[in-house]
Amino acid sequence: MNRRILHVVTNVSHYDNLAHKTGLWLSELTHAYDIFAEQGYEQHIVSPKGGPTPLEPRSLKWPALDAAAKAWLNTPARMALLENTLGPEQVDPADFDAIYFTGGHAVMWDFPDSAALQRITREIYEHGGVVSAVCHGYCGLLNVRLSDGELLVAGRRITGFSWTEEVLSGVAREIPYNAQAEMQKRGARYEKAFLPFVPYAVNDGRLVTGQNPQSAKVTAKRVISLL
Image 1 (cartoon, rainbow, N blue to C red):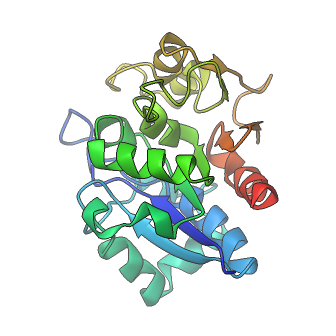
Image 2: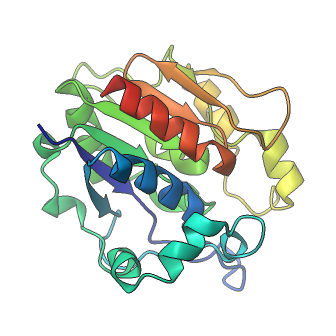
Image 3: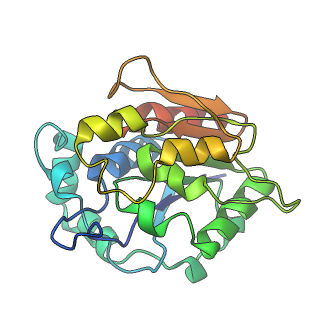
């Protein structure tokens, strides 16, 4: 049976400061998408509101803009996927074996409080699917509750963009909250690599998370191992 993956991307294009642009960190999508494609998986992309997803400007510069990301930018059919993402109402969670939350600082605004994304995530997880996220994508897991009312992340091993990495990125004063601290407030057992900006991923059952943009490939490979 062909596996089906649902990627989640943002609709937010700026920080609270309208002049400071943000969006999807492109390689966090492309690296995973390419690895899943090698397995022959069917893939779809959803966003909280549907329609276009903006791209984080910093992800379009070296060294973030690697060969995989450049290939996307130069492939009209792939870019069309980012202009026409599905809305949550178009997604039947029963159709998917895994959900993968991408990052970019933008998701801090529109992922956590999307009841529709929470529902999709819960249903994929509860029918035996894999829930995964990379970098800031773990903000999409902050408020997901299972049918018994428990938070999905409570007591679970989790990683994601660390506060140290936020500070080093130079935007810590502009983000709406400390995602690492918020995860820990919810009872998640947060982990990170000894050094910032190196690949690092964590498995806790069917929950897979990667720490930063450099972790997209290892995160995707761990999803495949579970599937």
